[in-house]
View 1: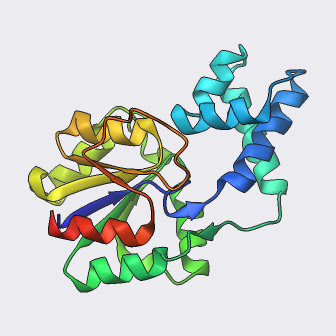
View 2: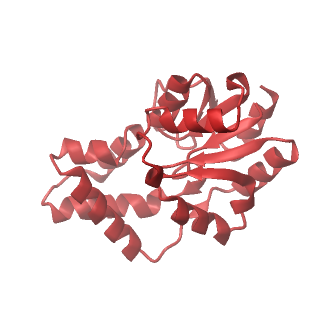
Amino acid sequence: MKFFIWDFDGTLYDTYPMILPAVMKVLAKNHVEAPERDVYRMLKEFSSKKVAATYDLDFAAFTEDLHTFENADQREPLPFEGMAETLAEIQAQGGRQFIMTHRMADDTKRLLALHGLEGYFEEIVGPERNFARKPDPEAINYLVDKYQMPKDQTVMIGDRFMDVLAGNAAGIASCFFDNEQLLNDVPADFVCRSPKEILTLLEK
C-alpha cells in the first residue's frame, strides 16, 4: 500500500474518553437513561447519529449539544501510543497520508499540531466539505480522484464499521483498527491491533 486514508477519532487519536462522557451528558439532558457500555458500543459499531436515532432525538440538536459538552471538557485527546512513529515510518517509506473525518478539519489540524503530526498529512477532509457521511464513499472517491490513487494501493483505516464499509464501497482496501477487540465480524481486508502493526500494510 502507498496511499493511507485515516479516520481520526478512535484511530489516530484516543478521543473516546472525551466523546463518551459528552454523549452521556446529552442523553441525560434529554432525560434518557442508557447504560454507558451500550452507548459506547453503539458509537463504535455505528455512530453518534445511531445513538440519536435509537433514543428518538433530533440529530442536529444532538450534535450541537454534543459539541457544547465536548468544548467544555478542557482535556485534550492524545494520539495512540506509537502512532507518531508509525506515521513517520509510513512517510519515510514513501507512503502518502490523508484524513477523512467527521470532526471539523480546523479542529483536527489543531490537535495534530499540538503533537507535531500535521506535516504527515496532505489533506484533511472534514464535514464542512459537505460530502455524504461515512459509510458513503463520496469523500474517499474525492481523494482517490484528486490524487490519482490506484485503488489496489490505497487503504482506508478506521476503528468503526462505517470506516471499513466506506473503504469497501469505494473499492479500495479496508483496515479495521481493532485496538480494543470490541467488535466482531467486521468485513475488513486487514485487521491491525496496534499502530505498529499498521506498518505491515506497506508490504501489502
